[in-house]
Length: 297
Image (cartoon, rainbow, N blue to C red; front, side, top):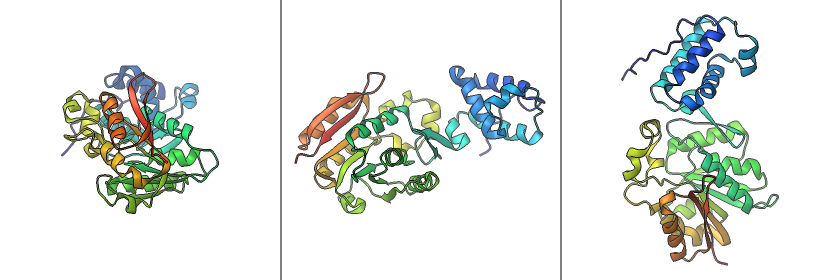
């Protein structure tokens, strides 16, 4: 289906200063607070013009192919498509990772999940880590990047997501193994070659009741399989807890990101499955966001 054309206002800009003002003005319709940041990102991706070049060469002529490329990217952004999909990548803890509509766009909260893991992982030991529901591979690749001695693997139920994760591993030069596995199935241990010293996961945790509250750019463009917990918001946490005796070595750690509304429920779930040292942690905004636990032993 053809995309409805939106007047971007950049078709006739002849010089960089005029183009910049038109670009910022257009993006204020989408995000007034971050319009200038978004504008620079689009400008650099479409034309190669850096912030310094924009400031020091305001009268630089704009070529027709540059206007066309920028206009096409701006059209997609103004239509509601997430900027990371438009430019094709997201930044995550110093890594430039390809993202497509087959994977979630990495969030700042998930960077904090990585921080929680790094606090628990020794710096120079070959510990084994599994990222369940890896998506773009952002968690697994960040952990390997910051703990080079670790042996890191990721799994997902989406073959399309695994292709993105493998491509990111290759682009980043990070030796991480990605395999197909469903944490709800009994063979997840065999498919992932456990046991592990840590299992980490940011599983789907948005309930269907919450779907209408999501921004349109998320609900319409990001993969539902990675967002929504369907009718049972704890199903993935129960599965992780159920498999923990086989996925984790004795004293191995389980660390997950959660829906803030279900912190106490996830804690109780882990405790009911015999996990110890179960702790609820908050994100930078003070919301319940992470639960850590340990297999006894």
